[in-house]
Length: 376
Ligand SMILES: *Cc1c(COP(=O)(O)O)cnc(C)c1O
Image (cartoon, rainbow, N blue to C red; front, side, top):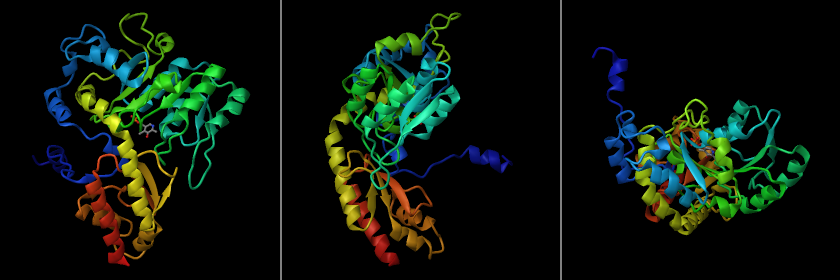
């Protein structure tokens, strides 16, 4: 092949074998062995549709019907579930099917950008409940109440936890508020569903949203959407022309391998959420050790999630006087087999302890220590 550009496409590789992964976006999406096998088995296009009789969620081979119709609702603590291309598509589907002209939505100030662009695409006016600000950035859900009274929003959304600080707001309390005002409550659990136990009904939400590639050991892009039975008619309304196709889902969402990896990893994901207490203890211990080195953890303390945000002024200071500038930290960590902070960042960065063992995290702590002394 003479065209170098085409040659490169034929040799795509990613050097991520045997590294310690701390990148928050990726720690919950690492595939199980079962999912890796299934990925190859079902890699061909439309492979899940061999025995389709008109609706994705009704396919029995592979067992999509059992997964979507039984296992997912049990896992999410909801009555009805479906699969989407991701958390953002789930949020958009809810907003789009519920919204009436002129509607607004009240969201937390730590909301993900995809909440905003989904609302923008729908034409919802967004009202934000501010966080407490630096350094903890907590959300007091009681502050939704006056905004609900003032704006009469068509729906409210809570990010649980947020993707910047890993703060876990009081979803149950907001569930009570939502029920009292009878306002539909969307729980964005992109960083929760598949990592920690989340039960939509117990929290009093109307909808729960999860991300397969973020937190459910899936290749993705894929997501899950759980809801109360009363919303099925609205969000999963069938087409007038095609009686077994949901309009909001454009007929079918995950018509291929992302769904298969989500299903193949599910037995493992279902079990791993029970280890959540140990995950939290591990994150707290790691944070305490890094603070001893002079890092400053932002967000709630003690922390209740594996996503940790640190300020590291000493790395920034080093970046100002070395040839590689901000990339020195990435290179030092890469040499030690650690994949963590976004390459180029030194002033502040996020890390997730979810996929690493305590032994591996000890090695990471020692590595930060030795990088600091090397440049001091
Ligand atoms: C990652 C993330 C999303 C987006 O998830 P997708 O499945 O990629 O759409 C949404 N919300 C939060 C809080 C996230 O962290």
